[in-house]
Amino acid sequence: MVTGGVGQGDSYGGYRGQLVEVLRRKGIRDLAVLRAVQMVPRHLFVPESVRHRAYDDVALPIGSGQTISQPFVQARYLELIGLTGKEKVLEIGTGSGYQTALLALLASMVFSVERVPHLAQQAKGALAAAGIRNVTVLVGDGTLGWRPFAPYDAILVSAASPDVPAPLIEQLATGGRMVIPLGDRETQTLTLVERGDLGIRTSTIGDVRFVPLLGEFGFSNG
Ligand code: SAH
Image: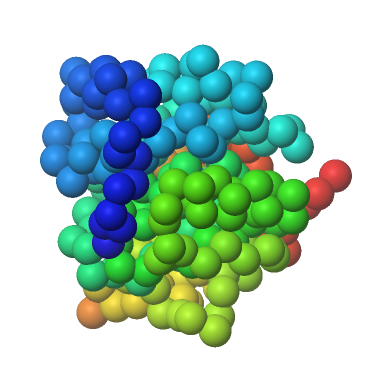
């Protein structure tokens, strides 16, 4: 849902345009996704120390040992999920809140779970500053999903997991899609999980590198 004025009227619009061009050159074709990147002020979601790199197509540190993912990877995620604007979405790993903001422009309602309270707090602040309202940031173990609002039309996991957490499969609606990096702590394969009338279908997309998903159905915290 587009809320008025997101990303408008700031001095970074030109840089965002350049980032959109880079993503397009690297193969992102979905116009709604490119439009969302053009609108969301990524500089509000990164720490001041790296703000000058906010519109480079790179991952950046956001504190608490976490990173904001590379825009190209986030755009790929969003292309794979194929949102139409009507969906209720669950995101695991809010981090900076940037991906959450892109989702908010592409779906109807977003619930985002972050395990580090300080990051959740920061993300809420950045989302409010960007004028985004159709998002609820929750603190907890996202490997358990978020049962009260299930089922979800789409689930995006932005941390690496050894397997698909069972609660997330349960909370995926029929016809729903989930994107999740599966593998070990070092390297993973981006995986698309679809729930059809006849059951679950998984397909692999490509190699990625994410921080670990820590929790009951993820990696142990140690
Ligand atoms: N898409 C994010 C990237 C976040 S990095 C962005 O654009 O900034 C992955 C995030 O997942 C980190 O913030 C980490 O704290 C969080 N995380 C790890 N395990 C989690 C869990 N079990 N539940 C919720 N969040 C988790």
